[in-house]
Length: 227
Image (cartoon, rainbow, N blue to C red; front, side, top):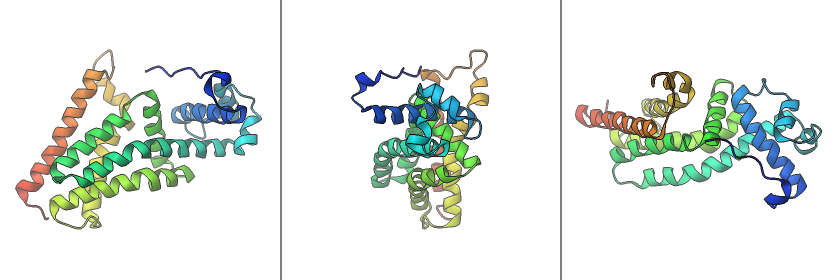
């Protein structure tokens, strides 16, 4: 989905200062997810946001401040949408049904639109190069998600979610989703010359993801809950 153009300040209802900060955060998400923190200059940020370069130190103290503001904005948006998914999974009476459903919901969340793909891309970048932004992502998004997955796996195996093997399995199950984001370029090559992840293909990916998770559940139940 093409990125929507920014509205003129008079059309947004924001004050001039709020509008400048909003533009810089939105621009930061686009350029940091594409080039990483070190690959972006303040000039690029200012040009993308269509603001004066001096606005960056004035509003955020520098490039690092914009980067952390982007991370906070990602956490604010995704945590609000992730929380009900985690609550639903935790409250479900059957962890064997809740686990595949949660992984599929997470995949769909990561593919909602171009902006969501940028959010998840930046989160995965921080996994490889952890910094202050990673601490925000981990505390507000990744840890609650992993805790929920570990709770579901632990319930299936009748083991405490704090067990090291259970938490490792939770990470591996999350990897089913994250690999589809981090390996997007290679993944899309599987579709031939057009290399397009169309809505129909996303639906097919979601169905396969659900089946893989369901197979994991079936294996646990077939081979015995404990190891």
